[in-house]
Length: 196
Length: 389
Figure 1: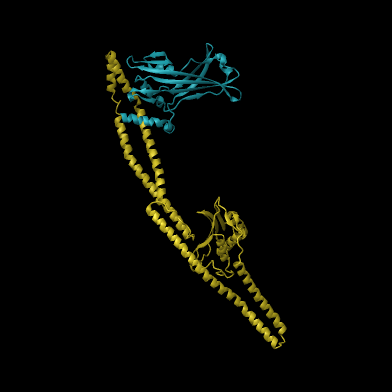
Figure 2: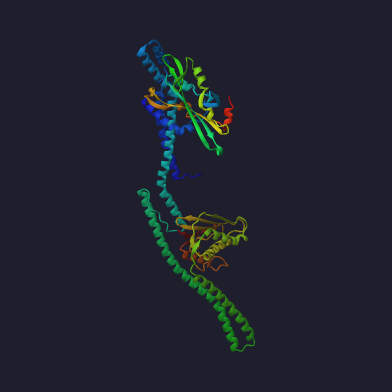
């Protein structure tokens, strides 16, 4: 088994170079859609929809009881005249999905806070596929005549696997080495402020 | 049938050998991997561990949970491990194949390069350029072969120089005989006319006036012929020293060819000029004279229908080579060695000095002129001039 793990890790180190050639199919790829900004308690909040974040293979891996971290990075970039970037707001949120082998239930954490606990996986999936109420910036900091671009990145973290003698692997391999990314067209600050 | 060279054979052979060697290795590796990945395919283990977790307490539960975690981790990661290993195998095979091709090409080039140089040198010698020397390289056997080849070409050059010297002597004897004969020919009518005049004068012949007129005409006509002969010989013998300056051959040839364009049907005169040809040190007027002579000879030799003249330039070694070839009547083998001799001609109208003049001009430019021909097969003239650095 040591030999196989060695081979696996050797192949994994080449994966970044070769992923482009070996992973042609985008079927089952993680998708981000419907990015949305809204105001809540004077804060500009973010929500979106995702698909295939927890695919069949990843779900099976979660069932091993290994906590799986899903990192969201949201960028709100403000542009001035002549398309000069003036400011950039970056918010990183980490969701963790964990399965308790003893209690046989799932738990979903947003950063350190447990936001959902259920026997059924479907609820966890539903919550993960519609991340919402992510506070980006104070409403007062938005300038109505400036342009903004919103972008979202999702990634899976690296993890040490006890079953592979504590070797670290990058869970992004479950997504076929694709890092989902979405970027909106530039829009006016006024458009954010007018949304209720 | 397509001919496959030694180089292609060797590359193909080494590549196929390496790939055939890789196949059983890859098969063995994949088989080993497949059997090693049996782990995680026994659902009863999973069921037992789950059951044990439910029924145990305290540390025992933790222990069973940890075992189940390990089992499920490996089970979940198995398809990835498999995929990644296949990926590694594919990359390895591709890398080995590419590397083997590159190494094979380098290795085979190392072997065949001296052979290719030898082939090129042999070709050069065949064209008459005997100074070709190959740098010694390759294996000891090939080095010996190259050394023998260089010795042979040096001997050939020496022999050729001796032959040329002897030939030149013979040529000048022949020239002297020809000139003497050509001068002697008009002397006879001059002598006869003078004797006739003297005879008529002594005998106070009544038609003396008439005879002096015709005799003078004959004498003057014969002297004119002698003058022409002496002039042509003078031109050949006292060719001015070339006024050398850097010159580009391609435009010079194009200039010469425009002189003949109007006389030729379309497609008769074709060219293939090498790009970026180095300059040569040349007297442009004299070189033009050489090219005019060669193209004129080719024109007189080709058939009126489907006649072809091809002019090409190439860069070989340190020399610029001009080729003028035609599909005309060619040169008889017994005449090839004599065509550059003065006063040698096979044409009824020629004075036999055109190619002799060309040979002298090219020699004085530090170059060489040679010909390849067989009767009825056309002729190709090669002019090799040293390229300027």
